[in-house]
Every structure is written in C-alpha cells, then in structure tokens.
Image (tube, rainbow, N blue to C red; front, side, top):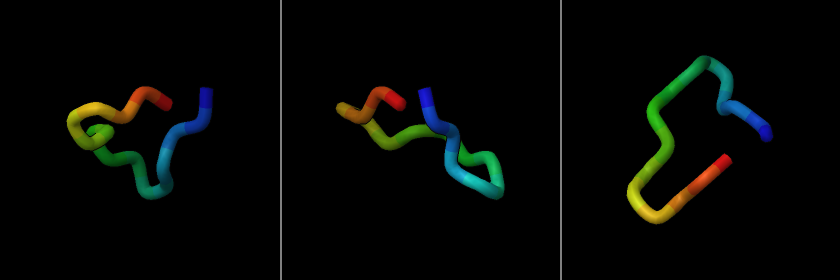
Length: 16
C-alpha cells in the first residue's frame, strides 16, 4: 500500500 506524497486522495479507480 503506497500513498502519494504529499498525501492526496487516490483518483477514482485507483487503489494504492
């Protein structure tokens, strides 16, 4: 599970 940095809500259809 990787989270974008800076933290941003994942786009629709994307599960990180």
